[in-house]
Every structure is written in C-alpha cells, then in structure tokens.
Amino acid sequence: MKADTIAAISTARGKGGVAMIRISGDGALGIAERVFSSSSFKKEHCPRKCYYGSIIRDGVAIDDVTVTYFKAPASYTGEDVCEICCHGGLYVTQAVLETVLSNGARMALAGEFTKRAYINGKLTLSRAEAVGGVIDALNDAQLRLSSSQARGALSSKLSEIKEIMLELISRAYATIDYPDEDIEETDREEFCEKLKIISSELQRLKKSYRASRAVTEGIKTAIVGRPNAGKSSLYNLLSGESLAIVTDIAGTTRDVIENTVSVGDVTLRLADTAGIRDTDDAVERIGVLRAKEKMDEAELVLCVFDASEEENDEDRFILDQGSQKSVIAIINKCDKERKMSPEFEERIKEKIKRTVYISAETGEGVCDIEKNLSNMYALDEIDITNDAVIANARQLSSVNSALEKVDFALSELDLGSTPDIVCFSLENALSELEMIDASAITEKIVDRIFSRFCVGK
Ligand SMILES: Nc1nc2c(ncn2[C@@H]2O[C@H](COP(=O)(O)OP(=O)(O)OP(=O)(O)O)[C@@H](O)[C@H]2O)c(=O)[nH]1
Ligand SMILES: [Mg+2]
Image (cartoon, rainbow, N blue to C red; front, side, top):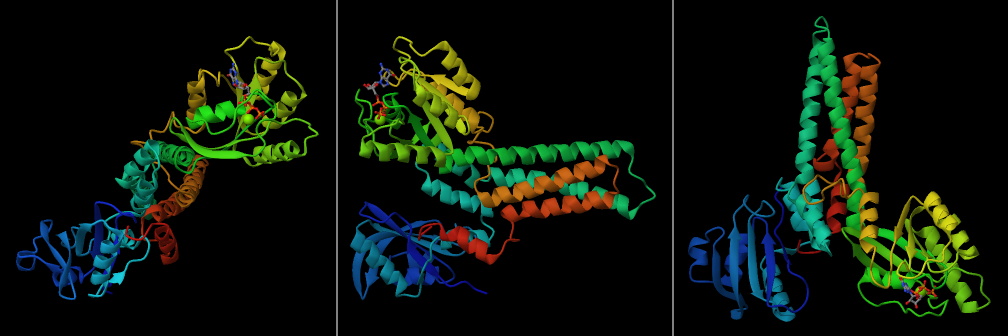
C-alpha cells in the first residue's frame, strides 16, 4: 500500500530566522512544483540541490524560500521528500504549511516522519528511539548518549551478538541432523566459551541501562538531615545557583524545593527538605512530615551531617532511616573545627557504604560526590559516548529475557543435555533480541513509540 503524502513544520514553534516545512511521500515533488515558483526547479528538480524562489498562494507570492528535493530512497524517510525553508515568523510559516496542505498533503502526526524512516528500513527501531533522545537532550551527557545510539552503537552490538548466536544455532542443528557425528569435547568447550561471551555482553547491556537511566531520566534524590546541617547550602552548590534560602537559623527550610541538576554525567532530580526534628511549630511540623515522605519516595538519599557539631538524636534517627536506602552520607562543614565524635563518624561509615567529606561553603569535596555517583550508576564502566547502551524499559526487558535463556542454555550444556534443548533456548534468546530492532513487534507498540515524538520529526 502506498503511503499518503504528509507535511509539517519540522523546526521549533516560535519566531525565528528560518523555519523548515517538510513534505514526504509520493506526492512531495508534485506539491512542491505546484506551490514553488522558481526558474529552474520545475525543469530539473535535481536531488539535493537547493533552489531559490517564492511560495505562491492564490497567485500571490507570500515568501521567498529555498527548496531541496531528496529523491527516494535517499532521504530521511526513505520516500520522496521536499524541504521548504522559509522565513521563521509564526504567521508566514503557518501560511506556507497551509499552502502545502491545500495542495494535496495531509498534516503529519507526531513522530510520523521518523516512523516512516523506520518502516522503510532507514533506521532500526533503537536508532529511531535514540533520535527522540537527541531532540530531548538537555545537557551534554544526554546528547552524547543519544547521539551515539542514534548512529547505531546499540544496533551494531546487537548484530554482533545475534551473529554469534546464529552460528551456534546452526552448529547445534548440524549435530542434531547428523547424530552419529557426536559433538566433540573440544566443540562443546568452544560452544560454552562463546555462550559465556554472549552472556557477559548481555549482562553489560543490562548494566548499561542503569547508566542510561541516570543520565537521561535522572535519579529522584532527597537531601535530608537535621536542621542547620547545610542541606540547602548543598542544594545550592549542586544547582550552581542560590535557589534555596540559607541562614544560620535552624528550621529555615519548610517547603520541599526541587530542581534538576547535573553532577558529572548523572542527572539528579533533587529535593531540598526541611531539617528533621521534633518541633512545636505547626508549619515546620508539616515541613518535617514532607521531608520524611520525600526520603521514603526517593531512589537516592543524600544524608547530610554537620561535622562541626556533636551528633544528636536527630542525626541518629536519620542514620537509621537512611541506611535502608541507596544513600550517600555527606559529612559537611569540614572547613570548621570537628566536633562530631569519632565513634559516630565510624558508625556512619559502618552503616552507609559511601561517605564523603565536603564543605558546602567552599565547594571542597563535591568531586567525591561526583565520583560516587559515577560508580553507583556504572558510569565508570560504561562509556556512554561509544558503548552500546540500553535506552528504555522495552529494550531492557528483551535483554533480560535473552540473558535468562542464554544462561539456561549454558546450564543445560553443563549438565550434558542434548543439543536440541540448547538450540531451543538459544533460538528463543535470539528472537527476544530481534524484538529490540526488528519488525517482530506489534503495530500498536510502534505507534506508541513514535507518538512520543513531536510533530515534524
Ligand atoms: N562553615 C560552613 N558553614 C556552612 C557550611 N554549610 C552550611 N553552612 C552554614 O550553616 C548554616 C545552615 O545552612 P543551611 O544550608 O541553611 O542548612 P539547612 O540544613 O538547609 O538548614 P534548615 O533549612 O534549617 O534545615 C548557614 O549559616 C550556612 O552558611 C559549610 O560547609 N561550612
Ligand atoms: Mg534548608
């Protein structure tokens, strides 16, 4: 079935120097010829050549534009594509789009250009998904990660793994078909070795999801501690600006204050909270309640302790609560004279594996927080700029299932099972991996993936 011709504004909404309207489908060239007046375009419409002329609406030129024609299949979508660059005013851009629509194109749905690129085999699914990540990137790490996957880092790693699987499956089938030629012991060992390689590659991919989530989605993080420990000072330091009020009055922060910050390559969805203590103040009591809720909800807790004060019951309470979570103990105010007892310091280190010493006042020690985060989220093992990285739960679920099946095949091989059992699990593992990039997934899932894109992409 031939797809209809679609069009949309592909640049961001808003006033700008230039805007681009993209048309894709069999009718793209015809529509461009009808709306675009240029001395040479109609005559030659040479692919990838940029033509200058005017957009004509009801016989009147409404804007001077350039048009570039990309002939199928050498285009973003794999179809005939024409891109019109006009002046970037809101009204003029809309007028050019409407002229295109009234000449035979239909308005594109969200993500429809990229969906067509996927359907026409221009992009694998994981690469198409990563294009969304490139558009959504808000910092350098997010851009590096998505851009590398958009260029195919994950797709090529998957192809490598699938190739080894295919080879093993065909070898195992050969021994099923010719049972007299029993698998040699050396063969069995080599088979085992290769399966172990696949298993460790899949484990690495699984781990990469931890890194990619920390970079792109961000980690829900709560800063907690007793009043005056320096929570808001740490919050401001990590935010790079003075957002929360800092005073030497205990009980300054009452509301929860939230911000998204980058610490190295890790994105933290950070919440500063009220200092936890028993209080008669009705407003502060609500703040303390909210702080405890934030601590419960958070994936990561930064427990701040004041090294320049002796520990008290609040510190002990926070230490007990915090040690049940993914947590970093922050021993703050290290620029001041130490009053915290060495026993308590030891207890912190015993209960919380990761302890860093900082001064939120001078900024000393922040790089240790960065190092700990990097280690916690596997960013010291996974190179997000070059390695294959799992970007979402859909991909992770396929990797997990494939890994389970490969490990099952390995244990069966160890037990000396017949090749058909090993073969069966490997085939299942292979089809799990194919789900990540191939057409095996249902149209509904494809629609859902592309609907997350903006119109024009
Ligand atoms: N010398 C020194 N002072 C600090 C440091 N961190 C915070 N302070 C001071 O400690 C006091 C309390 O800091 P805040 O950041 O408001 O502490 P908080 O934990 O948010 O306090 P509450 O909101 O009341 O719970 C302020 O006077 C800060 O300037 C530090 O590392 N060194
Ligand atoms: Mg505060």
